[in-house]
Length: 50
Image (cartoon, rainbow, N blue to C red):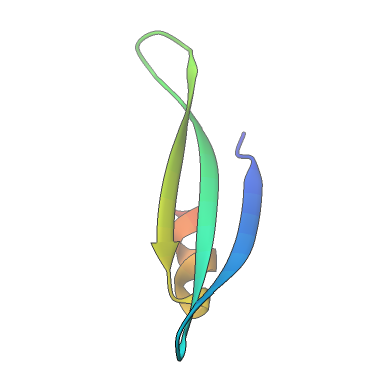
């Protein structure tokens, strides 16, 4: 189960997006959040990756 959240960021002439994914730990079963700031074209690949 993954939580998807995407916010757009603009810094000067570059357009960036911040993606937040919720990942379940196989050892403890607890959920953690993984955040990354990237180009908008790479967001779907980041969210699809396990």
